[in-house]
Amino acid sequence: MKHLNYTETRKRQLSFFLLCAVVSVGILFGAVYGSGHSAESPLVHQYFSPAHCGGTVYEVFRNTLISLSLFVGTAFLLGVSAFGQPLGIIMLIYRGFGIGAAAVSEYVTKGMHAMPSVILLILPECTAVTIISVLAVRELMRSANSLFLYVTADVSHSERTFKLYCLKFAVLIIISVIISVFSTVMNYIFSGLR
Image 1: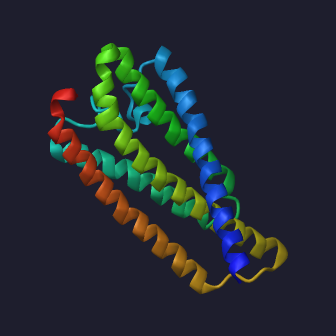
Image 2: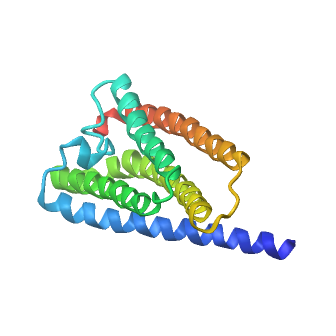
C-alpha cells in the first residue's frame, strides 16, 4: 500500500510539472507576441497587466475574479466531457500566453522601470494563477480520462467521483476569490507602480 501511495504521489508531481511546462510554452509565445504587438486587449493580457487590470479597486477585483472564474468554470465543463483533455492543454497555453504578453508589454512600455511592477504586481499573481490553472486542468484531464474510459472500456464511474470533482472545483473557485482579493490589495498598495 505504501508503494502505491508513493507511486501515485510521484505521478501527481510529474503531471503537475508537465502541465507547468505547457504554461511555460505559452509564456514564451506570449512574450514573443507581446514584443511585436499591442497587448491592450483583455483577450491578450487576461488582466495580468497592472496598467489594464482596472482603474478602481472594484474593477481590479472584478476583472481578476472574472478571468479566474471563467478559466476554472471552463475547465470544469470540459472535464465532464470525454474529449476535454486536448482543450485543457490549449487553455494552459493560452493562460501562459497572457502572462508572457502582459509582462513583456510592461517592459515595452516602461523599459527597465517596469521591473518593480513586474516583480511586485505581475509575478505573485501569475504564480498563484498558474498553480490554480494547472490544478484545474489536471482535474479536468483526470475526469475526462475517466469518462473516456467509462465510454470506451466500460470502466466504472461513480456518482461519488463526480461529487468529489465538484468539490475540488468549488475549492478552486474559493481560492480564486482569495487570489482576486490579494491582487486587488497589491494593486492598491503599489498603485504608484502602475
